[in-house]
Image (cartoon, rainbow, N blue to C red):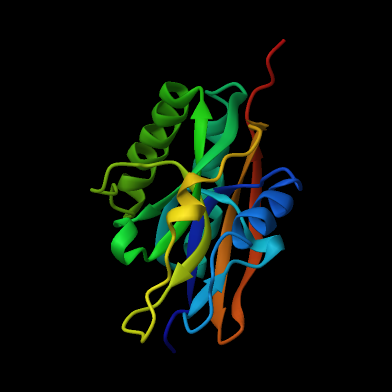
Length: 192
């Protein structure tokens, strides 16, 4: 019998106020004739690592490893700030909110996650880590390319957040969107 594979990633939960930012930014785009799939409110998160297809039998090892990593780090202070897109405004595929704050500490944390998971058979991501929160995805080809200029030029008050815990998540993809399940939660060492 084939071993069951889970689609997994490591993420950080966001302050609930991100929903208000998303709604405000959503209102800046004329989506008539465009296919824009907005991330459901409860599914927005900061991804630290997309692991991919993971044997169910590896979940315990992943959780043990993540626990040991989080014990090496203290809380990371960040803010949600600014908007952007990938790959470029003329043909945006991903609309996002940016991250500011203790980015060097965040980068060190992500490097540690990658380094500790590589021996378990989960390769280090080759792309540079660009911290962001995905708000929407735009599919191509389509008849109308949405104008994201106003989205990119809209400002909002910084939303402070702290990384005090991370989640190992599984994701099941359905036509109405992804359904996430928490497979483990690991707390960073609190600042005294």
